Length: 111
Image 1 (cartoon, rainbow, N blue to C red):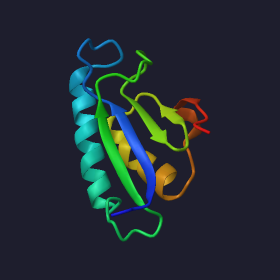
Image 2 (cartoon, one colour):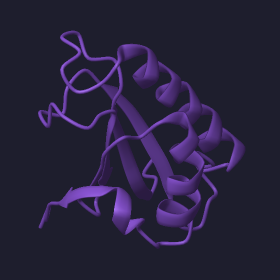
Image 3 (tube, rainbow, N blue to C red):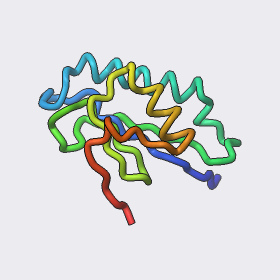
Image 4 (cartoon, one colour):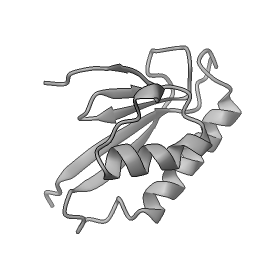
């Protein structure tokens, strides 16, 4: 099966060394991300824009202002990704294509 992928969301959520964030906040953010992706039906293989993948990472090597969410292929790195911010990021950035500038740490080109 060859599905189109619209975005891949990588969340540094449960760091073993806990340098960037409180692991409890990271775990809650991960739970919120999973729930919101399902509720928005972003994993639906029939979604015209393509499916949204999600991965939980131990560390994305930023080590400050976590939890950190990297959105591929946009190369957008969000900091302070609390459960309360997940819904806004998904609705505005992933669904509507409007990044939330005040929460972005940096952008990286993947070209």
